[in-house]
Structures are given as C-alpha cells and as structure tokens.
Image (cartoon, rainbow, N blue to C red; front, side):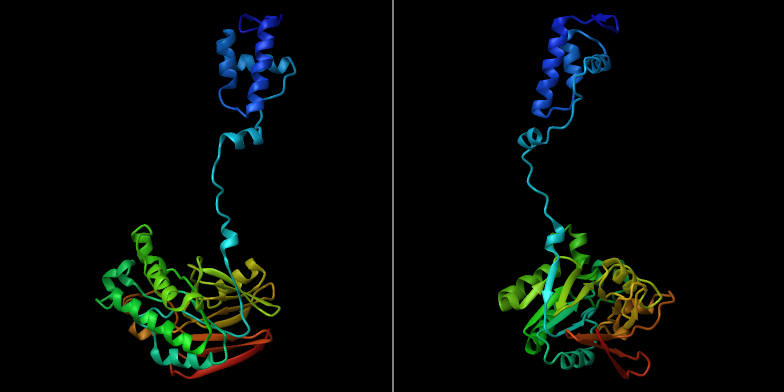
Length: 323
C-alpha cells in the first residue's frame, strides 16, 4: 500500500476516498472535501489525501452545474441591456438641458414651433438644475425651489404634448442629484414620472437609463446624456458615435455642434434650452469653458436639421443634412 505523511493507506481507505470524492462530484460540493476525507481516514494533511487521490487516478473535484443550481436557488440577475429604451418615430425633435428654473422660455417656444409635425419630442436630460442637491449648493442663491422647478417641468411637458403625440424623457446627471443624496428614496424624476403617468398615460415615456436608441425608418441613432465633458466641442459625441458604431446625439455639453466621428458616423451635441445668463454657478467658475450655444435637432428618416443660436448676438442658424 502507498504511504504518505507516515500514513499507510489500506484498501478500506481507498474505498472511502473513492466514495467520498464521487459523492462530492455528484452533489456539486467543492469546499472542504479533502479535509473531510482526511478526518475520516485519520490523515493530518488534506493535501496528502489530494495527492493520494491523484495517484489512484480519481477525477479532480470540479463544479457540477446542475447540482449547484439545485442547491442555490438564486433569482436571476436582471439583464439591464434588455431594459434600454428603444424608440420608433417618423419625425422627432430633440433638445434638452432645460435646467429649470433657468430655461430660456423664448427659445423653448421656438423649439416647439420647429417641432410642428413631429410625432415625438425627446428631452435629452437635465430637466431641472437642482443646485440645492449638488456641489453648487452654496452658489444657488436661493433660486432652486424644488416644488417650483417640478411644477415648471410639468408645464413644459403640457406644452410639448400640445405639439407632439408623445414625449420621451431621458435622464441626465442633474436629474439624479436628489436620488443620490437620499439613496434613491426621493427624486424629482420619480415625482414627475408619477404625475405624467397619471395625467397622460403612455404619451410620456421615461427612460430608465441616460441612453436610448431611436429608429426613424432605416436610420438608427443613439441618444445619450453622458457625464463626460470636454472643452473641445463635439469630442465626447464623436467618441460615443464610434463606440456604439451609430449616429449619436448627446446632451450635457450645452454647446450645439455637429461633426463626423473617425468611423464616419454623425455626432451631434444639442446645447439645449438653458439660459446661461440665469445660472448662478456660471458667475463663480473660472474654468476656460466656452460660451454655451443653445440648440436642437429635428430628425426624419431621410435628413436632419440642426438649429443653433449664436450666444453673442442671438441669431439663429439652421443647417440641413441628408442622413
């Protein structure tokens, strides 16, 4: 009989080792198997038992998936990719970054006029400023009244639904401020969602994530409100366009811009409808950010028209491109 660590293995030991390894494999047990065998046959070192089992040609202890699934009845983890919003439209107007109560009302009316004939209006994040719940709380000058902000956002939805059949809301980083500091217990996004569902049903669609996909005929677009910001206009949108291999529209930058990515995809930043003159923290920052350029884009299956407003003289410029 083989001898390991001063233990002389008997025929009975061999049978015990073989049986216990077979049982472990059948039940899917992987932890403490050699320790239990060592205790059963009186060997002090479980590694010695492991080597002995290998010398007998016994199979190593491996996971038995079926046995483990029987032992661990765990609920399935949600497939988040399947929960990303997919939108179909015939004609869509896209803007965002209203940052209520600092939205430029006149620009909002121009945007609504541009959306005449659209079946869908898409708000690409940051409906509200919510400075009181951000790092800019000390600079909010008392202007960030939560109840008033929520009321004005609801009024904006009312007006949008007088123009389009449906409004799609995609959250931005500001829309998560209150949810973050209350660990999800409170949030204007949830309050507005509840109000909209009660009043308009499925005419107002809320995206769970700051990204959604839009299809207009054969044209595909990614809609995104990223956290990323760079001074170079359009650079973030271009990177996302190549990452998703798709035409892309981004919010967040406040600088309306259109360019092509390295992969040849259309990359658009919509500057949104916020009035830079009204936002308190812009008077505190000394970072070399450029002037904000408000704007929006209207999409059809065949082309898109981008409107941007010159921040210095307030003139409108609209360019139309074939998709």
